[in-house]
Image (cartoon, rainbow, N blue to C red; front, side, top):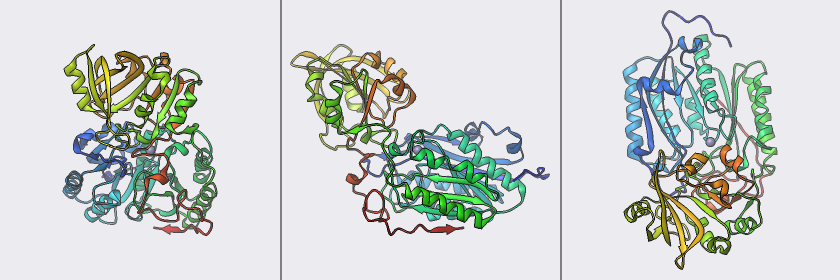
Length: 496
Ligand SMILES: [Zn+2]
C-alpha cells in the first residue's frame, strides 16, 4: 500500500478513547480521579510522530482521551459522561473520513460486559458506517464481535512487557492514514477467537511459547494481500464472554487472510499446553522457606495483588506470612514489603512523627481477602512523598519492643515499587536487603538486575495468577485452562 499525493483537502480523522485495564475481581472501583485526561490538541503529546510526512497529509481531530493505570471496574456515571463528551465532539465535527480509537481493550464498566464494544457502537451511530476506523490496543485487550464489527483496522502490541507500545500506536495510525489516503476503501478483515485465557506472566514474549507465536507476524505480513496481523492474549482478570485470545488479520485478499488467520490460530491452539510461568512459582510460605537459603537480594513477586495489572495493592497475605517467619522476625534476615496502599496508616504515621513507635492496623481495607487488616507495632522510620504513591511512610516492625528485620512501606495512593529510585527516595536500599517482596508480576528491568534469586508467589488477589480459583462464571466454555476436554473445539473464522 503506498500513499498517494494528499488531495487538496486533507482527509479528516477524529481521535478519541478511554484506556484502562480493569480487574472485575478487584473490589475497588476506578473513578475519574484515577485518570489522566487530555482534550483537543493536548492529545498530540501521545503521538510524537504527528509531524511525519504521512501524518501531515491528514487533518487529525483529537477530541478526548482518558488514561489510567490498571485498576478496578470504572464507575458507570463517569463512563457515560465521557462517552457523551466523545459523541458530542464527533457530532460537532460533521462528516469524517476516519476515526482512530485509542484504547487498551480491557476496560470494564459497571453494568457492561463489553465496554469498548459499547463505546465503538455509540461512535458508529454518530459517524456512520462509512469512515475508516482504526484501533491500537494492548495485547491483553479483548476483541468482542461488537468491537470487531465497529473497527476496520485492528492491531495490538507484539511485545510483553510492552516495549513496543508507542511503535504499535504509530503503526496503527499510519496504517489508518495511508489507507484513507489511498482511496481504496475498506480492507477485508477476519477474526478467529481461540478459547484460551492465560495470565500475562505465562505469556511474556521474551520467552517461549509466546515468543515463537508472535515471531510469525513478519512472515504473515510479508504475504501479498496482508496489511496487518495481530494476536491478542486477552484479559484473564475480567469475567466476561469476550475474554479470550484472538487473531485478526486485515488485508486486500480475503481468501489469503482467512487462510493465514486460521493456520496461525490453529498453531496457537495447538500450543495451548506449552505456556509456562516466566519464573519459578510457589505459595507465599513456600517462597519464604526457599528464601532461607536463596541468593541475596532475594526477590519475591506478590503476584495476586499486582497493581500493575489491576490489583487493589493492599492484600496482606505476603505480610501475614512474613509476620510468622522467624528468620525475619528475629532479625537474622531483613525484608521489605513494598507496598500496601493504606492512606489511613500513612496519616497515623505522620501524626505519630518520624522516630515514634505506634500501633498500626495495616492493609486489607479495600481488598479484605484473608488475612485482612493486620495489627503491627512499628517505629516510623521515614516519611516521604512519591510522585505516584503520594505521602508514604516506612514502618519498621517491632516485636516485644525489639527491632525485627521487617520493614513495611505504606502509601497514600496505589503505587508499584518497580524501580530502584522508588526505594532510594525513601532511604531504603533493596540491594542490601535479604528479601524484597514487591506487588508485581514479571520484573521490570531495575528489579530484574537487582535480584540474585527470584520467585513468583501465587498469592490470592484481584489478579490471582491461579485463574481457576477466581471463579469465572461468564466466560465461554470450554476454555483452557478451566476445562479438560477441549479436543472437540473447532476454531471458527468470523469475517467482516
Ligand atoms: Zn498489557
